[in-house]
Image (tube, rainbow, N blue to C red; front, side, top):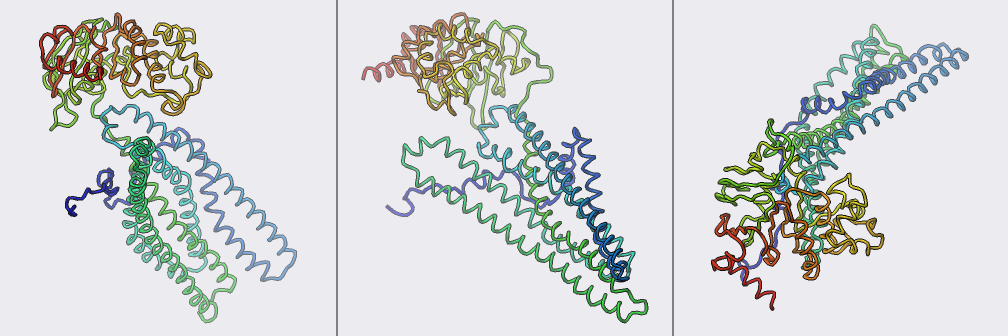
Length: 608
């Protein structure tokens, strides 16, 4: 086998360009994002006001502590009066205790405020996610969505709790220390000001690189999360085809890629933070030289006590520099998280109910398609000029090869999507004029991939009608002739159900889906490959129950097992997005077309 013809193993790095759903241009700190995030504190104004008061108090206390220490050294210590030194020291300790008490309450309120902000943010994220149409979920990877709720929201939480308020304390401390230094000795203060352009230049030099590094690191983590979620959901396929080693190699590439982004970020930080700290040390060295000269040789000498006080205050000024540089890094991470979170919140659905859409007061169940065209992607039409009428109470079977558009039709009926052209009517009312939620409340849907929530069997049955009593649930199961199946479970209707229905057989899961559809008592019933997960014996048992379930309801049945649709009022045969045949079972069999061939193939396969 030549190298060109050898099978090429997919690379995990092919996900990178696809998953990079946010630009990485140089936008370090955006005031608009900050103000929008700060808007989440409005419902907690009283708590926010108390926090601001404590921030201002804390910012003033720290330089005043240094000033008090210098004042003790300049006054009582210099005079040598022991009782005054003791009194001053006790006063200093009392003020220091008050400062620490302020810190305790500031941190407590900041933590509470940060948690409430992120709680509300995640609530909005989830509400917005639930409003997105099906098209969004077909485009986005699960892990990418999860990362908005986890790593991105966590970055925002850290920013809300620490960055803003700690930065205000540090900046306030620097400002008050600078004012006190200017008051004590303006000459040394001017020397200190010469350091400001240097610090500003270093920050400007590194902020763009840090912003880009943090954004790329967040995005690579999103890809790792997406791959983990995908691997867990597909573990049965992975083990079934013995792909554990290959998947591990793919994941190793993604983790290595994420590690490289983290190392790159750390390298930038490793230069930025020491540079900021070194410049602070340079100033202290200059301060020692100039301060010593002023104390010993200047025409207007400063006292040694004032020089010591100036050193204390300079520590209050330059001490926060390294802290602010570190906070700046946290701020960039928080801004990247906020950018990704708000970009998701600003993502508008492909379509929404029209403002004039109304609730359905009632529904008889007549469904009509008029010239409907639909495509998930504009260049690849799925349905072409679909026309049919399903009268109230009729059962319509949708038959055709895989990919012919059967599931797309029922998705349109449920208003999971809207057609690009044509019109769908419910009881002669355009579906666009009906609120989707109102329509689906009058529908029952049973899918091929049955989905059960964690809880117990009863919880999952009540999804069909949450207000139903347990007796009503039992009656619905009895009408479907499957109550004995539920009662045979270890704890009956209260048997625990694991994630995705773990602990139940495929047939048991499907029976739960049928029963909750019966409990909902819908006017329109959709069965999309609903019997494909049950064995032939269970299917035969369900057939009589299904007749009861379908009776009096407009039903759309998608099935490859053609034996389940022989009694349908009309059969629509689709091929390549068009209805190529229509009629009852016996009519289509006499026609000898596509339906007849599919039916004979089915019968031969089952005879074998």
